[in-house]
Image (cartoon, rainbow, N blue to C red; front, side):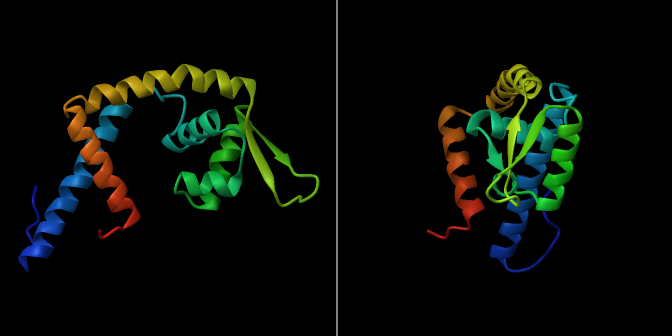
Length: 150
């Protein structure tokens, strides 16, 4: 659905593009969610496990930054993952403010099981685009995300 705003052409185009972008992202996320692969986890919980799986132990602030979540939100996500024994928090003995988050064996097993399934589902969903279209979309999203003008 395009914008119903009637203004200067550049603003109308930007609004129309934004609407299509957000609707496409929401539709893609809904289709992936409906597959049920991540059923035991929230999207944020999966993001934490995936980051730890691929990057290794991280401090809470770095995790928060990588997942674009507030520190308060990440704290709640980590609390819930820790209750399920999927992650472990370790305080740095030299600086007790520094907490390193690591996967437990159960967390490692779960993400090793779920990640390939989710990655395959994403590949299937994006297969409506050619490889070149996927590269172009990736480049455009990176540019948009960084707010680059050139």
